[in-house]
Length: 229
Image (cartoon, rainbow, N blue to C red; front, top):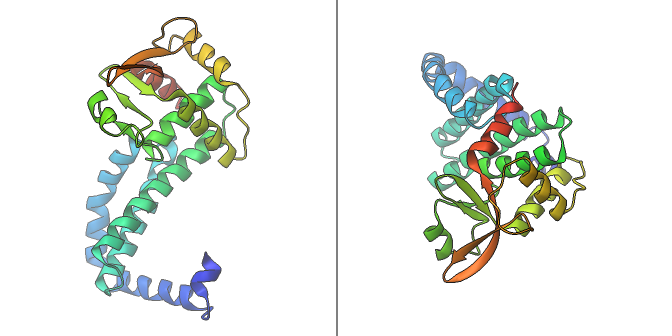
């Protein structure tokens, strides 16, 4: 990407950095005021989505830098409103994902915890979409990986398993436990709502009974919170 960006001009990146830094220097009072106001807001927001609390400040600094760069792009007419919103969303997702990935890579996790971390992280960084309720899910089943109710997270178990394996593959790790075995571990740990012997739960969707993996939301968050200790 950098090679493509620089293209015919090897100095374009360093030149852009120079003008960005000069713009910040020329508005140092405004920039400092913005940072003082914005940093606590970003830190509070990131505290809720970053698993490694010790890295929250670093994530907030990265987010602030991204925001200042986008503001500079706006000021010189280099970005449309649509581009600004697109880049802001992508950078936020990338920063949170990178911070969380650094955190989980530093830990040796049991398969059950690996599964839950992958699901929770993928939801928080918007890699997968979860409907707010069953009615919303039924309106567009192909779009969503599952839905919430007040107490549980309902997942398409085959889609969820692929999310988990892909997540760890992207971190150069292998998730080796089979679908059946991981469901059993989750159920043994009292994390699931189940029926029968498959460790799944039948949900009525548009008049049809569909098997889903149903995770207790409170217990899920307890597992995630325990990793921060």
